[in-house]
Image 1 (cartoon, protein in one colour):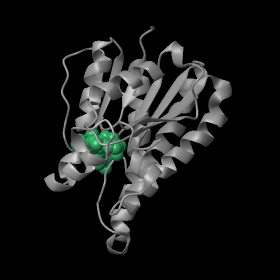
Image 2: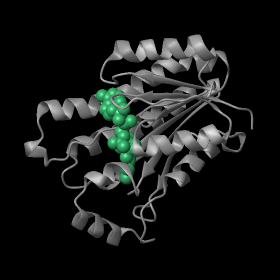
Image 3: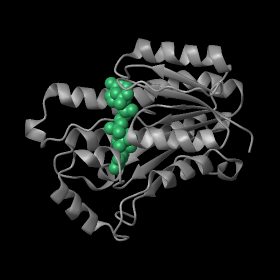
Length: 236
Ligand SMILES: NC(=O)c1ccc[n+]([C@@H]2O[C@H](COP(=O)([O-])OP(=O)(O)OC[C@H]3O[C@@H](n4cnc5c(N)ncnc54)[C@H](OP(=O)(O)O)[C@@H]3O)[C@@H](O)[C@H]2O)c1
């Protein structure tokens, strides 16, 4: 496969790190975005960049820096995300707003910002990382579930708008993985969650990285507007 220029948001997070490591091993050029946990790389094909995804001007600047360095962006992986658990009636306006800003607004603004480069090169892939809780609902996740469900709607509409420019837009809805956000869940709740997963195991981030690598390959040219479930049978 021809090597791609790939921007991964939240590359400093648990899943982002492993997606980045795998795509780097496949020889792609990477832009690794972080917020509060800096990433270092000696690889000349890897650029690291900080950006607060709540601030549109910072996102615009990040995309400008990437285009300056690599001349294009082939793939955008909207992976950064936050979850501020609380039942709806205890969710503060600030928690709601921040969750929307990072989980939904940022993927929208970043998609807007990369589309001109993708159009100019007649190739693009946008992959939005969403969650099974957007599909099923889960107590204590009203803001998170709403933001991630919004991402599925964005994926569907955007895919139809940009298909004619050879840009594919897909979402991957994750079940429970063995690292990252799950670590904020108390151990006894983790045990109960696991009992609900038909394959009786948590997801391995390497599977996610390989699914992404497939979605950016020519074999996936006919896949767009989809939400691919990676959840061990939790929801179908
Ligand atoms: N892990 C799971 O089981 C699971 C399940 C379903 C869906 N997901 C989804 O998978 C994605 C990755 O999850 P994860 O488990 O790897 O999460 P994580 O370890 O908590 O990582 C979150 C990432 O988001 C970044 N971030 C947070 N606030 C930000 C801000 N204001 N501006 C820019 N970036 C910000 C963090 O950057 P810094 O660390 O540099 O501050 C970090 O890279 C998320 O979208 C999540 O919703 C995960």
